[in-house]
Length: 356
Ligand SMILES: *Cc1c(COP(=O)(O)O)cnc(C)c1O
Image 1 (spheres, rainbow, N blue to C red):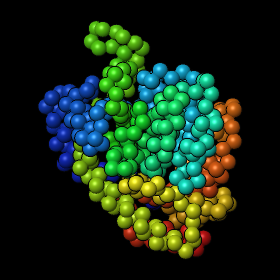
Image 2: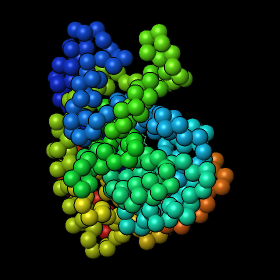
Image 3: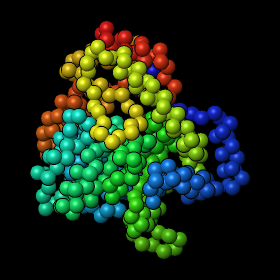
Image 4: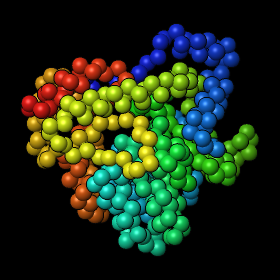
C-alpha cells in the first residue's frame, strides 16, 4: 500500500538517546531543555527572531488570531486545508474568501483590495503546497489598509523566497509539524514572528495566560512536550536530504507524466522550492475520479488536496463564489510524495495514470 504521505521515523537508537536525556532530567513538558533546544535550532534554520513550539499547527493559527486581537473580518483563501478556515471561525471571526491565482494556487492578491471593508482586520493566506503567496504585494495592500498579515505556512518548511525563509514573512507565520508533513514532531507546530511584544503575548496565551502566580489574561494550553521535541531534533539535520529526495521524485513524476500535459501549479520567480507536494490538475472531476479509482485498484492512495473549496463548506453561510478555487478543488489531486518512496513506484504510478 502506498499512501500520499508516509511518516519518516529515524533510527530507533537515535530517538532512544533523547529518551535517556528525558529520563535523566525527569522533565517531560512545560518548556523543557529539548523544547528549548529545538526552538533555538529552528530559529537558526529559518533565520527568525522568535519561534514558539506548539502542540499542533491548528492551535498555532488560533493563538496567532488571538494574539493579534482580531475580532471581525479576515480575508482568506478558499484553497487550503480546512484548519485555515475553521481557526478563523473558532476565534469568532468571519472568513471573507478571495479567489486564488490559477498559477500559484495561493490567494490572488489583485482581488484582495475589492474585498476590504471597514470590518476587515487581517489577511490570512496559505503558502499552498509550499508555493509562496505574493508576499510583497500582500504586504503593500495590508500596509495601505492597516491590516495584519498571517501566513498559514504549514507547507512552507524549507522553501526560500528571495533568499529568505518563506516562514519569515508576515506579522506572524504558523507551521505544522504533523507526522504527514516534510518535517515533523509527530504532532506539533510553531508560531513565528519577529515582533518582541507579540512573541511575549503568544507565550503567555499558549500557557494559560499566567507566569507563575501572576495572571494576566485568558489563555489556552498550546505547549508541546520533550518527546515531541526529541523527534524534531532527530529529524532537523535530515531536512536537506528530505528535500533533495523529493526533488528527484518530483522530476520523476514530471518525466513520467509529460505526455499528458497536465496543468500544474508553479512557483513565482525567486523561489527555492521544498518539493513538499506533487499536485496535478486534471481536465475535469470525472477524469480525476477515474484515475483515483485506477490507482486505488493498485493500493495507491492519492489525496484530494484540497477539496472542497473552503467557501463551499456546509457550515459557511455566505461563502461567496470563488470560481478558480472551486474549479481546481474538483480537479486537483496530490500524488504520493515522501522520502522513502521508490523511483520504481513513481514510474508505476505514472504508468497507471497515463494508461487509465
Ligand atoms: C496540516 C495543516 C494544518 C494543520 O496542522 P495540524 O498540525 O495538523 O494541526 C493547517 N493548515 C494547513 C494548510 C495544513 O496543511
